[in-house]
Length: 89
Image (cartoon, rainbow, N blue to C red):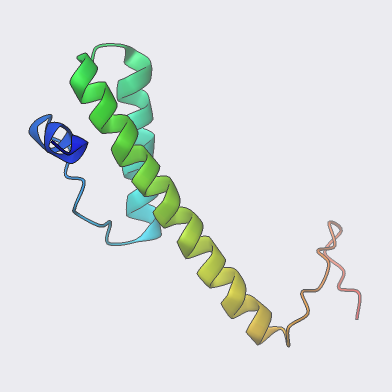
């Protein structure tokens, strides 16, 4: 029997993708808070961990996508960040 069924029965909406990066980060922060609180039963903790892993993968993919877009906008060459606010042009 697949483990997904036990995660779904624990109340984790594993199949529901986040609407945005920000929503995924907020949900991830909420899961971390719940897990750190130590009040979740074992099955709910496992489901929360699985959902958190999905959210981390989603966020990483979104960041890679945005990084690719920035590379295209910058002509495939990212400029180094200058901490003093001056651009090295």
